Each structure stands twice: as structure tokens, then as C-alpha cells.
Length: 87
Image 1 (cartoon, one colour):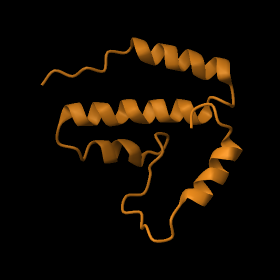
Image 2: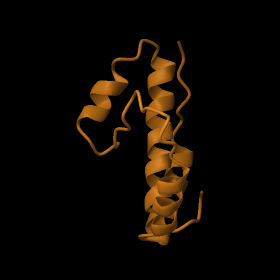
Image 3: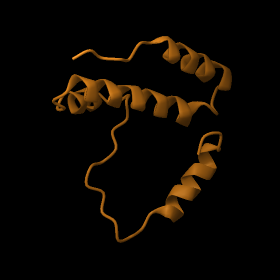
């Protein structure tokens, strides 16, 4: 839902949730201190790195409407980070 306003995302999420599906793992914000504790529970370094990279992309996508120029610059800088992990 890239490019969709936060209000429309909330409305869509409200109507797309099924009452018959139970959430087993609650989402954790990258800004939450528990996020990195959660990431460190993973066993493989590659998995940990992928989870952090995905969380950063998700955070940028959610907040891009607040300040498009700022978050576009974050996204550009993120492309410059070599996330590849050698095991």
C-alpha cells in the first residue's frame, strides 16, 4: 500500500482483518526497545540482518507521507548500506 495515506491504510486494515484469525506474534515497532531483543532471538545472522532491513523499509514506507523529502533521503541512504552478510 505504498503511497496510500495513513488514514486510508487504517481504514483498509480495519476492514481486512478477519475475526477468525488470531494473531500469534504481535508486531513490534523498530522504535521499540524490545525490537532488537526480538531480532537477537534469531539464530542465523543473515535472518537477523534481513529482519532489521525489512523493518527499516517498513518504517520509511509508513512515515513517508509525514515528510516525503526526508523519508526519500532515508530510503536513498538505506540503498547505500551493504546489508549482505557473509557466514
